[in-house]
Image 1 (tube, rainbow, N blue to C red):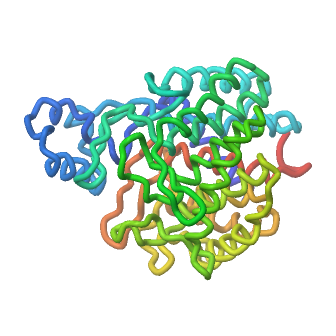
Image 2 (tube, one colour):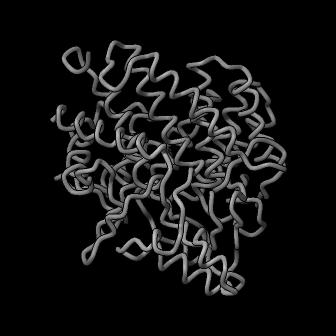
Length: 401
């Protein structure tokens, strides 16, 4: 099985490197040069329909409609996180995925790329997506509008890079992201806590995992600067999220009626963020919520054969984020070894059912016609990071050089 996983990962790695980590995205329809030339781009319903058409279609029309392959900051961050794991493997004597020298150079190159992708004009380092996107009819986010989600993934990756390279300038530039969270995101009171907005636009402050990612960024700032204001604000966001956890350990996605679903990978994001806050601040007062959430996560989103479920109450669509995030979350919570057999089943099922012979992973499987398009951020970057975590967690004296 380990040989199969190694072969799968090397195929994925070769594919992504050959593409220079550029690719398409489920939501990049408005990058179409044809759509941008049409007056429809000024109509919210047309923008929604265009984006959803690209996202839902099992046929990839991007070449035909002139959508270029580009770097996506969140995807680049995920690749950087994965290479940092491969570097730790090489440090431990396993150079199956590259030598220390080779991987270190990749880390430096991707670090610079990620820094170059920052959005300008904000209180600190911040990142957005490389395409315009419409969230319902309420919000139009022009490309590179920073979000707390993209920013958090970038911050975590750059912190990991710093821990390897010890480049103080990288750390300095990264930690300014806390100022973006503190000054540029809106905050809404909830109980004795707060909920951070998803982005700089007012009114999108209802998403639980996004608010927790804001707390995660602030906790990294506290770890390295001991800025108590950042720690206090992070704790308020964690408190609000824990107040919103249901008795069985579950979380809905957000507070609006249309956001009331419960899904796998956002549950994983929540657990990861709370655990990171605790580790960075040494405040473990929220551990009961982590324990309860982890139990719910493991019990409700994975079948015995390793098949991942998207929602707690139904299976389809099977989204590639689901098997990827659980590996990362369990590693971050330091409980991977307790669930290694299950994680191996999940990864094996995913390789068997969602990887193309060319190395890339599919977006979603559905009961009807599935979307097997290669998306660099959504599919390949997530799986690259997840598999690097898995390989580091399962390295033994007989596995690796």
